[in-house]
Length: 152
Image (cartoon, rainbow, N blue to C red; front, side, top):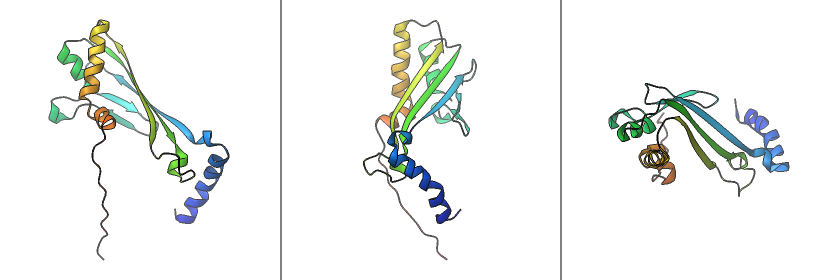
């Protein structure tokens, strides 16, 4: 694909988003199932399958499961859902006031557990506290970008 092909592909989308800004707002959804033995969850994002969980350097491979285990809360299984809203007018430079990136992200957990409401509240609070992705989104890291051209 060259620049002309890309413009031809994007122009109808840009025209549509200019005339109907709501058409540019898309909600992406991911859902993962917590297995009985696994500390991680597989997340289907629509185009790929990703496995989410703790890095091995932290002694495990699943944040919610690891927190539940450390608290002694039995979680037989469950579902993790993530939704995020994007306004593609920003990405396609259709509207300068439209943000590039997610404008809202929602996470929910449906757990098969006999834990009390107080235990579930603690589980959610500590999962938020110790989840690297959640904390990175809540308190963005310092970012830098650089560009290096190859010598010919």
